[in-house]
Image: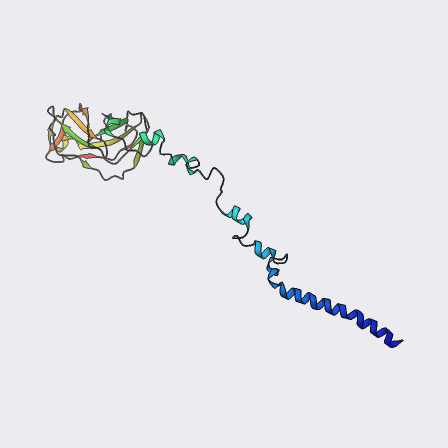
Length: 228
């Protein structure tokens, strides 16, 4: 009875050994498939090159709005804007857009001070920056005295909306105190900063120094307002 119990046991073990061997053979033949198996799936989907979801979220949008950049850009890059073409902020004021005038004088200690006012008469905003030009002239248009000197100031850009004004100071020592030679101008020619054409303003403030002691006339940079 002992041998009868042994043989059935050996007979049942043979298929088990064969199954193990067959499983090992299948594993050896399909070794490359493990990288695509369920265990390796997290490693594979971590790469942006093979994951559609990563490509869609990591790259730029591909919808119709971004395929037409001109329709999605900020307003500031719209070169067809009337304000940009006609003189929006940052466009220099030209002489034809301005009116010049002499503001109310402000006497100082031995000095005479006058604001030269530039007013935007155009329909669009523009800017002025720096020193204007100025020259006293007689009735024939001949300049009286040298060009004014520039006071040591720091220029800033002044934005003029339609109707807005900026002013620059014109200063000289009182001739009756300095003893300078004088002349009586008919007009003051004012040239806006960075322009060549001048604006003529009637001069009604009396004689001005043109030569001799302390006869220099000084100009300041333009500032917002009318100087009054």
